[in-house]
Length: 107
Length: 121
Image 1 (cartoon, rainbow over the protein chains, first blue to last red):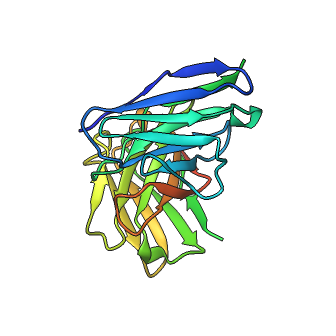
Image 2: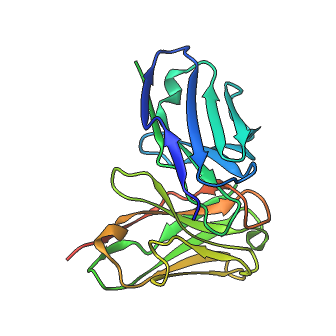
Image 3: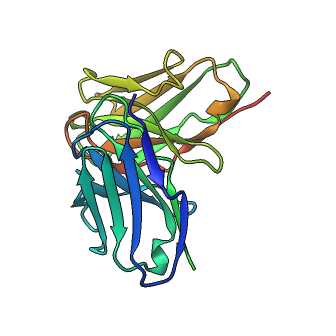
């Protein structure tokens, strides 16, 4: 089974900072990669799919890139409302596992 | 408006069974794959199981394979998860989620609020 590994597991950054989260698949998954945001006590929200396509309504400061095994979620200018845990997920096979998550906090 | 409402959670003893339901509305249910995702207390998201719109594709996480069974009733706009031989590690909030596209291999664009399952003696 393909495993999804995220790094870092947590980070702390200042408002306005550029933040980058990495997701690595143990085997190639083309661009079948999604990113989700889960704010404390809330339901997960789809941010990006197909590695780089922004879901409707998601602010443009979020972007995704990558293909194959290595993927990146970037927040170009961190805002207070971006405090959340972010998860990647692959969806190219019958098993659709998530990564372990990256908790983003404000410094 | 898309709505997914889970039910059926509760406190159950180890080794017993529970059946979760998800009532869907606001979209054409039989056009989309559906999934169950769980989140243990203080833990990350864990995909549990998924089923395509015509039941042709079904998948289970290794942690639940052989114990859980996913099903759907398109006439009732409902998704189910039969959970047998429950273990303490199955304790979690169980979410129902809708696929973004019409195929099975699609991320999840809508989620329910979840139903809590607690496995304890």
